[in-house]
Length: 359
Image (cartoon, rainbow, N blue to C red; front, side):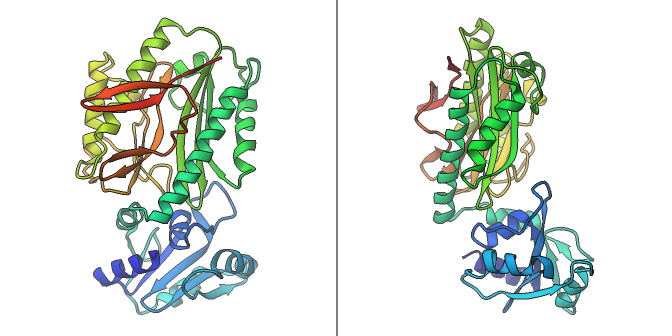
């Protein structure tokens, strides 16, 4: 149970209490429930304050009933509500609850010690139930992106492609953190493109970061109308080899920096030694689309049952899936087996990496 992990952390670091204000930590501690109203904020409208004996839900009276009844009433531990009117300063209640105690927090508050990086190391190791929830989300997210690739048509704008995908995702109770859509020359010009009103002509890149139960699925797919150019043919194969090299290095005991260095080496072998600098290459995922962006110097040690999403790119192409790290290798949990794939071999290991759908 997550509450036990939190209390063990508190005890091991001599904290009397821990304040959790971030959305991802609320979801983690409540088994996938939510404390937010606004989709675009990192913080919610209700906080959790944990001590050795109590769990307090701290919020406004305006939010109290719904958050408690729908998000906290069925938890396997008792929650006590502390609230005040929406126009009052809720931080007074937090101060009172932590008065005289050695307190930690996941986001800056008063002079309490910020420990979110330590919490990330705990929450990133996923339980069996979390992994099951994650697999289901990732399959739904990947199917939505792949169906969108099969259904969009030339002439539709990037906005319309975005809306088409969003309707599939939102109808399943999945929240959208990121949708990126680029078509044709915009894929070559921009590695991180938000949608515009440009119409699709021949090729589209569709990217989704989708959240449910606090977990985030990350997936990219491409669709092309008509025959691929020689340039795209070459680049998609090179990107797949870079992607496979990075995923092959994603194993317990290696660092995230080891993965990036493996990717850089493959970029060099493919003839694009500096392209890794043009887009972040991904990192640890789970309760955030990226808990951190890895670089060649990242010393974070990879553990079994963590999730990663790497996203190498070359001009006109990119490769991205969400993977779970297991003792016997990685599991591509956004792999649907209902797509077109490229077979890539790294050492003795064969990988199926997403290809471009040609229509």
